[in-house]
Amino acid sequence: MSRFGSSAWEYVAERDEYYFHQYTTAQPDLNFRNPKVVQEMKNVLTVWLDKGVDGFRIDAVRAFFEHPDFKDEPLADDYENYKPYEYNYLKHIYTTDQPENIEMIYQWREVVDNYQKQNGGETRVLMTEAYSGINIIMQHYGNGTVEGAHFPFNFFVITETRYDSTANDIISVIKKWFQNLPSGHVANWVLGNHDRDRVATRLGVENADGYNMLVALLPGIAVTYYGEEIGMENGAVTWEEGQDPKACTGPKEDYLRTTRDFERTPFQWDSTVNAGFSTANKTWLPVSSQYKTNNLELQSKDGVKSHFHVYQALLKLRKEDTFVFGNLNIEALDTYVLAFTRELVGNDTYAFIFNKGNYSTTVSLSPFKSVTENVTVVLSSSNSTRNAGDILPSGRLTMDAHEAIVVKPQ
Image 1 (spheres, rainbow, N blue to C red):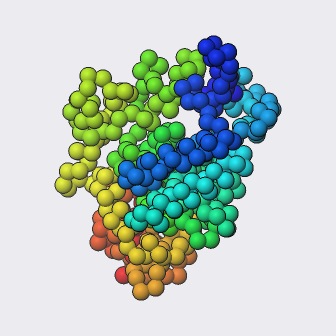
Image 2: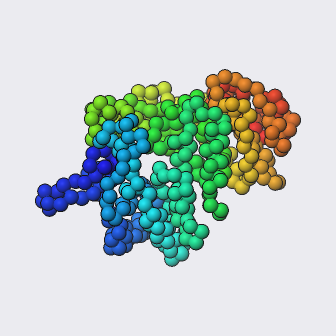
Image 3: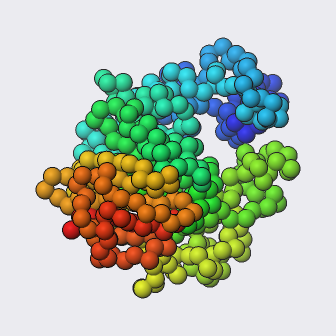
């Protein structure tokens, strides 16, 4: 069965043969068991490296190879929850996460590393995309002898974080990655992407700054999906306007449940026609109706405390050595209050506190031995009444609902 529903085999009358496609009929699978195909793909990588690209985002890694016998796949454990034509109706043990997928990543890493050795310049980066289990994802990094992806996207923040997640729920997601991370490799944090509802929709626009601050100030790479810097929410798209092949090739009645178009609407630059995204009469997907009240131009104005200004300050702050090299200590200060410190000898210590709950609460920073007495606000979420420079007591700190702040000891 294809990822977008219905059979993965497509008949071609002209040849009286079938071809296999894990995704749309316009995306025939390549036969990576053929060495000529493998070499040709390496040639393709080299062509783009010659053009000056800085790296590659490799999509759908878990679907490169299939079991060589193309066995029928069994029913999913929860198949009763799905319709027979839906992808999740089956357990895809023969068409995903085959061991050869990992080996292909390693071969491509060799291509980009050899290119750098021969041509100099910065590291050419490999990023891999797969919704696989943690044990398989960590193999993307390498096997201890051979290097693989510089980093596989960490989607567990997306898949295992909900609006009602507690502080400990979020901490568990963070610790899971660090506990499995191979030595010498870097973590990364992905809040949203083109496959899932936007952060502001999924986790609450009131929490958007807090989550941006969370992933930007943790050790490792922070990945931003366009629109997160201004707190963009899902747009409205009808069946007639839809473009997502996953939803548009299925029944109309399933569209609202299965489409990914809502999180793919154009970026909202300003309040002009098409939100400043295009001068065309019609865009590929319709612009969100919110574009006149939420756009980059409005949020960029001087004196406005906005998601974008918080985001700008956040990216500047994360360049501090403490956030680049410092240790992490993370705690749940209350059911919905998460906090951590970043510490580096000879540099400022910082503490991040995020109350993602619906009510204000008073907490103490006493679990962090490096934070005593009063603290100074360095950065606050756009919904916070605190401003940079405010002095707060570390022993009794009242956090408003959905407020996030960064402080440092005086």
